[in-house]
Image (cartoon, helix red, strand yellow):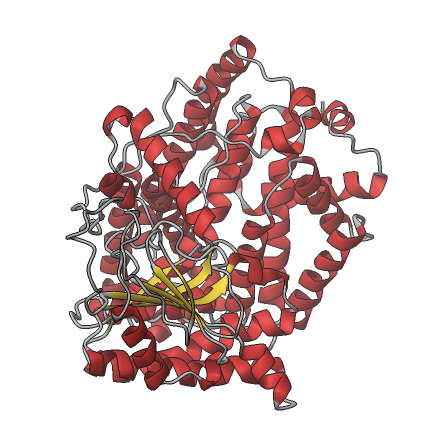
Length: 607
């Protein structure tokens, strides 16, 4: 059966087949639940999932083999080699060859691979997670994309052109599943991880229950550890309970597969609780084969009937054009939490009477495109990275000025989705160094009552970058002064597309009436819903374009372009820009009035 499936997938190279078999054995050896559930799927998709899981286990083993205190050169070499393989479209390593074939055959996005690699790099350093928030961040950044990618492949295998994403309205479901799966796996591996000197539980929860580090590392089951583990197994069950299944209308086999997967994890949680009666932690808690088959056999029979009644021709999917595959529909599922609707921005009418067209007042919201860092550095014969560091000092200066002036909202364009085209060293500085430097400023901004928000996409960002950004947002969330929004990995069209996708999901699920959607309602689906309309859109560095920055919020912004490079920009330049704005007449689409003038000293535009 596997031979026929290999042929249908176009796997003719013996090395690639060997790689798939290595991945299959790794899945069978270390992922008893995953291997069992994969049996419910057609052979072709089994092979792809073996490659995904087997590659994850391979790099996990590389991270463990090098020890938690070194730099894990084996892991890094493997990741770099895969990057080179991807560029060459071939590999001489069987596991990398199997993973490469899967990525190419199923047109998988590289973002989830980057997240997985970054997570393994982070784990290889031996960094422990001090708080639940850090644990949540790790799961959301590393584990959830993997779960969602597998779910997308299952949906595609059912004949649905579906690609799940963070913006499709089902994120709560996938987050809860990922948290439950990861926490259960962590509890099952406590003994093995302890023997390796690894602790993957949040340290704060160990302190809360009085669990000694030595007991965990030595595998000793103390009363405190029993209480902690039972508390965490209950937590995992609650996450599973809060995860609704996929709507059966999509494809019955998918619902059967997911229910079996969840059922096996519930069984593993029960087994973990029962093993607490022993004196020592086992290397790994595993399920009895008889118990697995009690769940698997009826599920396999049901799935076989479902696939027979609603078959999917894999050859049609693999032959489809990339454009067809990349045009996804959204799976709608009920969200788990009702969130108070954020305050919508104040939308202005697109036409005002002559009496209403008046001199602009002090702006509420200034948005700045931070341009010219690299050219500033080149002028001084410095590396471009030094320009970005100098730009962070300029940001600190401008925030001070905004606070002095009483500005309510300041939004800055730090890194766009198009900036990935820049050299790796430069993007590394933008994504790793700058967030860490901003963390130092947060202590000052916290005292000044500055609230920090982040607008942008998580996919593809390094783990430490997302951790730094979420830390800044969390630490300042209760502040009520200046709101500083950092647009990092941001693209305006992507923001609107994601918002539209989420709104469509809610409409399909019956949560909103699509015929009555208003602009304020749509705004609730944007990255930062409470962000008001932009009054001034300012760009430094002598360029005169908006570069996909805040297209929804800046519809009627006054445009100001200045020649000064961003590192040289000061609070005085900000004040001059505001003065220029206050001398303008804002018409919001109304006819020009006699006497309207434009300040000739500043390149500008507006409507």
